Image (cartoon, rainbow, N blue to C red; front, top):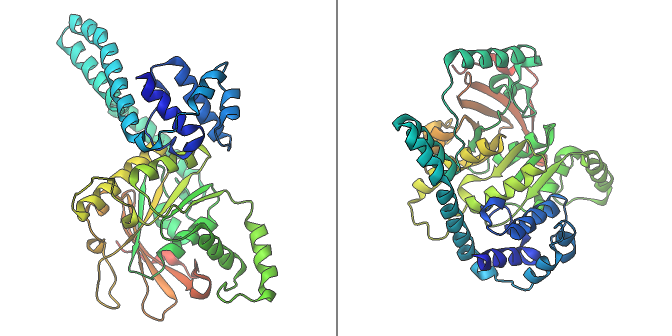
Length: 405
């Protein structure tokens, strides 16, 4: 098993450090103490914003520099999946073996104790945190505290503000652990709305753009901030664009523009950004996430699995994930509904919040419908769309007077 561990560590230093978060391995999965130290050191180097190499890892390895040096010559990137699977299999076997005495002790105490221990062990082996049921009075105490905090918060905000007061009125902010779906027909402005929100939000943001490059995202953000079109940009506009860039430099936004993205790869990159403090993640967009190799499930089932996977990731990271999605074809001028979410009804089932965008042809005002809100009411919001800057702004009148029920 040491050979598999050595092979994986040798790939990470310095050949493929980007695999660190996507392998699904943890320090405890390595049997050799020295290998655990190297794995921990690689993580520390990456967290420091450096690239793992012989020097940077060796310095953090507590006397294991010689082992690090022996690993860097292995370079077996083609067999990463095989080595990873073998490490996980051996790790599971060790944990099962270690749990046997615990189960034996519980069995000696009787069926109930054994059942509790068996459930706890199963939960630990599956990687799921065991959360015992809570009595109602404890739930009510916690709930009262939440309500009290909400009452003392301006506007009743209980999550991350999306930057639009009219939308926050209905949602009370995007909640940690929630999956938010923003859906519309092609070219209505899903990405523009997501970037408009990201630009206005006051927390660190992650933005995964599978369709556009980071430079295209940057161009859009500059156009929004400067109120200047970047199509056929003139030299006279450059001063405004440079000043806009300087105003935005303080924003903590990580942009990932990997052209091919699987759910496993997305998880790893999201964990990387979460370690750097992001409090909201945008995914542009859901149906562009590629299936894992060998996944031959029907497209509708696959999209449902993606939505469920993003929801699980949101809970794991403790942040809202905002995923953009297209809708099925509908009649010209017709307002979309939840039934129009493309490919899978499971998107609606797993989403905590669904925002539907609708704009009539040649009209600048766009209707944003809060079509599903697991924590509150639904309703409509009007936003103004400035197409020359791909920018959404608030409509001045009192949006929240429009209640959709």
